[in-house]
Amino acid sequence: MAKITVRRTGHITVDRKALEKRLVPLILGWVKNRTHEGRDVDDNPFAGYSSSYRRTLGRMGESGAVDLRLTGGLLGSLRHVRTETSSARLMVLVFGVGTGSSPAVRAPSKGRARAQRTGRRGPSHALVAMWLHRGTSVTPPRRWLGLGRGGEKMAARALGAMPVFRG
Image (cartoon, rainbow, N blue to C red):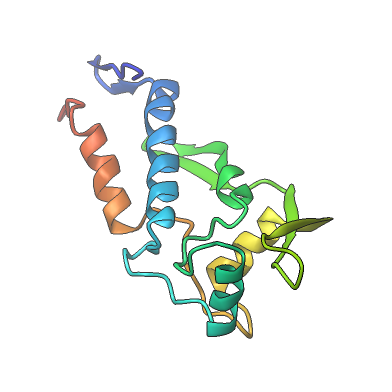
């Protein structure tokens, strides 16, 4: 883990790169683990899949539990995009998903016992991420990208060892 040093020299100095190195993996892990567990940014279970989609997943040998990881491509492309610093007191870490896509998957049908890749690509991960997060006319929102209160508390605990100086 990166060492974060704070010195008092009339003002507080924080090594932003060290802070970034410490927070980015924690945040990525938090979002991926919570999503894999089927929970949204507010720590509520994701809205369930439709009964027809659950049947399709069952025929593919997949669980009907909502975890947003059928191909693994979306969560696998989640990354730290950039760090924005708008003042000496604020650092904004921006996360997003890649623009790549996952192979399209077709459910088993007569004569096929397992799901099969179609040879085509699905929509971009960025588009799927937006559809999942906001919902569509036929699917409920599944707000997955963000920290929520639980993630904010986790980040605060991770930084809690840092000394705080008052002036």
